[in-house]
Image (cartoon, rainbow, N blue to C red; front, side, top):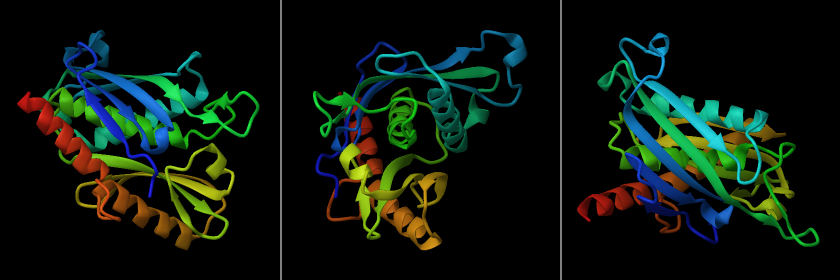
Length: 235
């Protein structure tokens, strides 16, 4: 079980939809602004029968480089899998993700913030997917399924760790991010490290429990998203 649950705050920005998402154990806080539907800037980029999806990720205190571009492409791929792109053809769904805080490596003198270019992209990927989906729901983007993502580490003893922090990731032989929809279907799967198929399967089942909220009485990612969106619309 993650020691600190995820937190979602809606409407921090004056966009069509916006949210601030803090991942379990406080690995990242990401603020997202969503503009939808908007006109495509260049006519040549229009999709005649579909919505164009654009995702931009900005690091906390640096410029976007290779890692951020890769995360952007995976978040875009996830959104394209779950939104109803045919509802707004020739229009643009614009998602801007700003990382506002990252965890500190407590084992180093003075603490050094995680997330450099040489580090794994998986923790920020899991947070970015959940933030993007929260923002899209707040903007009223029509979806085929609501999905949520989870970061799972597999230790050398085979134990699955939920949203492991920097010091815990050093005890993991592999890391996994799964995006899972409301039916339990896998929308996205990304892995790093050395693992067997049994490890991967166990990590997936753990992610499903975290996303769907069926483990240890903990509110799942999907339940948290639905609750926040429902309360936001009532206000």
